[in-house]
Length: 246
Length: 213
Image 1: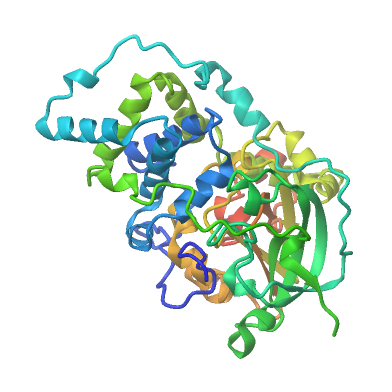
Image 2: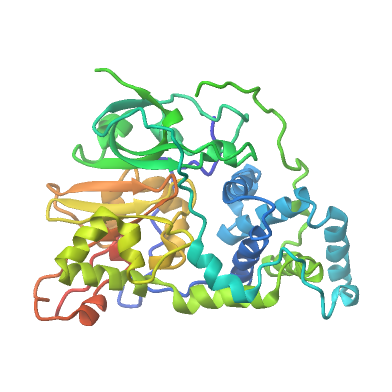
C-alpha cells in the first residue's frame, strides 16, 4: 500500500527525544547542525537542486524510495545524501564508475587525482552572490489557473480509500494512509497548487485545488481516539476527495 | 481525475541503488559526493558556506518570535497575520524558501494548535529556521496525529481536557506557525522584551512562551 515514510498513526514508537538540560527543563535551542557533514549533506542537496535537473517533489520521492531497511536505519541527513546520490547518477551529473573510482581511491588513501584546483564553474551552478536572492524567492507552488474548486467550505468529503497515485505504481502522493477512506469537512480552499503526484514523476505541474480538511479524532482513530473534541487537519488536493452524503 | 493514464510500473530511477556504493562513514560519504560535484564545477564551495552560515546564524526562531511579539502588541497586525500570514510576515522581511505559503493558527483559552509533518519534515524555514531533531524523529511523526496529548505531556505540557487540540499535518506546501497566547503579567512589556519570551516550541505548539517570574 504505502511506504515507510508514511508513518502517521503508526504504533510502536517510543518517547519523543525531547532534549532537556541538567535541571530537566526542555531545551528550546539546539545548534542547526550537530556535525559538519550534516551541514554539508544539506547544503550540497540544495546546491545540486539549484542546477534545475529535478524539482522538489522528485527529490522528496527519491528519499521515500530508499529501500525500507535503509530508510529505517539512516539518520535524517543520511537519507538526504543517499537520495541525492541516486538522483545525481540517474540524472547523469555523476557516474557510478566515477563514484566507485573515488571510493576505491579513498580506501587506498590516495586521492591526489581528485584534488583539483581552479575548476571552471558550470553555467548552471548556483553562485554564492545569488544565494540570498534565490532563498528569498523560494519556489512557490501556487499557480494561476482557471481551474475552479468543486468543493465549498463546510462540505463533507470522503477521501480515496486506496493509495491514490493514478499515474505511477507506488508513486509519490500526499494523502497519508491514516486518512484514507475517512470522512472530513472542508475547512479552507488554498488556491491551486502544483500537484505532487504528477510533478514528482516529471509528468508536469497540473495545478489543482488544494484544501485544508478537518477530520475529527474519532473519525480517524475510532474508539481509541485520545479525546473526542480533538481534530486533525490535512492539506489535500482535490483528486484525493470525493463528495460525501450522510 | 478524468484522464486515466497507463500506470507506469517501472521505477524511473536506478534499481541498483547507487547510494549503497558509498562508504559507511557518513563524513566520507559526504566528502565523496561533494568532491565529485566540486571537481565538475557543478557546485561552488562558497555557495555551500553561504547557505550554512545563513541557517546557522541568520534565519531561526528569533524571526518567528518577532512576528508573534508584534501580533501581541498590534491588533491590526494580528488581524493581517491571521488573514494572510505570508504577506504579514513579509512586512518584517521574512519570506521565501519553505515559507512561500504561510498559515498562522492562533491559540486561545479554548484551542491549542500543534504542527507536525507525518510524511517528512515540512517546517516554516523563514520564521523558525531548520527543524530540530525531535521534529524529524519517527516518534514525533508517528504519534502526534494519534495521541497529541501524550506527546505534549512529554514536552511538559498538560492541557485541560476542555481545551480542543488541533493538529496540523503539513502534507502540502502550506507552512504553519502557531501564535501562542500572550503570557499574563506582560502588559508593560514592549515588543522587544516580549519577543524574548517567545520560545521556538511555543511556535510549533509543543511548548508555551516563557512566564514572567
